[in-house]
Image (cartoon, rainbow, N blue to C red; front, side, top):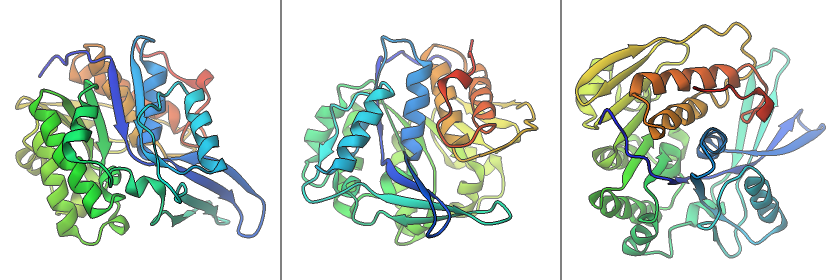
Amino acid sequence: MSQLAMPTKIALIGECMIQLQGSLFGILTQSWGGDTYNTAVYLRRLLPEQFEVHYITGLGDDALSHALQKAWQSQGLKLDSIRIIEDKRPGLYQITTDSSGERSFHYWRNDAAAKYVFDQMTAEALADELGAFGMVYLSGISLAILTEKGRATLLDALDIYAEGNGKVVFDNNYRPALWPNKETCQAAYRRILAISHIALITEDDDELLWGRGSSEAIFADYDCPEVVIKRGSEDCLLCVENSYSRVPTEPVKNVVDTTAAGDSFGAGYLFGRLMSMDPATSAGYGHELAGRVIQHSGAIIDEVHMPNLS
């Protein structure tokens, strides 16, 4: 799969939560964030206007949910597939920073609207909806937050979608606290990876979930046409149709906030592939965007700081 066909409608599935940041019982600032949302925003900024970037999640019918939709639309995202879940609200998390700069996260998401986004759908109906998109992107967090029923519906729908030549992109973002046990997570990951065209694998997360000790073991176990291993500040590794390569990254001296490093890398990589660039060039785009993002505070940097990827 050295060349990727150019779908112009892309859907990203996940959760974007309300963010509170500041000192405990002090002044808190409000914002919002989520892994797939971050990727969606950066992908929208990079792609030409003829592309549509859709975000699929669940929200409530409350003031915060309405405000989130307006904020997402201001970033150019399409929200046709947002589902309003009655009597539910967006998830929330709080970031606190201690005197040494170490951050702590506290989450209130177990009953968030996004958890129930697919509960009232059949797999066939969802697959029919996803069929409008040439590419569907989701992460391990996208799967983890769902109810058991919703997760089964989504996986069944993606099976149908992939059989119809839809392209699935999966980022392995693994958060142990969101899963009842490793076995449940591993079973879900096996299913999604079996139908993925592109797997974006964070090496540390893979080690935590599977206990693999090498990139060779990852490539051997992931039977995807295109596997990208993200290794933080180190070179990323590619396996494309059984051809292996390494793409170096430039050191970043002024690291401020690594919150969305992996999310932005994924956006840069997909941008390159959607623009018919080869995987190595696309990985270089991912490195360049991530390197720019981590030099600024927050997951979403101001557009003025975006690199010109070409």
